[in-house]
Image (cartoon, rainbow, N blue to C red):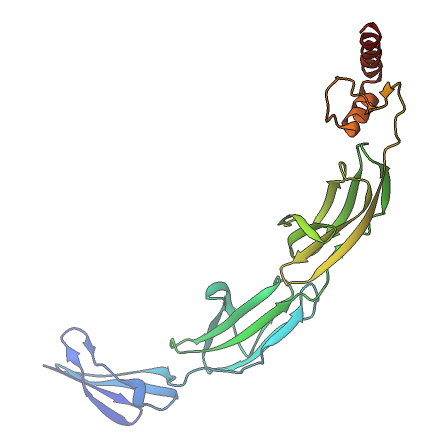
Length: 293
């Protein structure tokens, strides 16, 4: 008959159970941290047995410091979060950014995380440390990467052109780390807007078709942080020169080339500029008809 007992250090835990091998549960939650000797002893038939092993008990969670929240400007460098950590049996740590696993590695006494690569935004950064017994501790830090830099927008030149001519454009070059949107105003009223999502972009607009006079064209660009910048161009449109042609008049006033009333003299001038020979031909025919009548 076999009788095997278990002793923890100098304290008898009690008998083990088994036939060819023996076991007994030991609840270590009440044991002191540190090194303990487990001894199995007794008799198996006429054979006296005694064997020991060394084990370590760790009922203490790891400890981790709490660095303060951090705020820095996007694109700047030298931003590091450091935690002081301790445990008798350290194992590994995990870093989570907004609940997504970012990295894992072994740890000993300090954990350092470089934040320079984070883009504009706000983040919850959590570090979880584990020891060899599966105990853990954690700390969460708020990281704010701000953008207080105004976008860059070139200054476009004012321009002047003659009414009715074409090919007149205004061009701006814009850049920002976090582009977002743009708005275009003419004489203070918005005429167009859109999304701007390229870090370096060229805005080109046509200013053809404006009436004679002075017009202000303003481009405003915005980034995701709400920073904005504007540039205004003054476009001066000079009246088109009047075109002088052969006309026939009577005491009652100007005679329309078509013989009808209510003809638009501006329209006639435009036609004269574009199709001068046809306009002259019309005038001659009208005059000849009136003479034969």
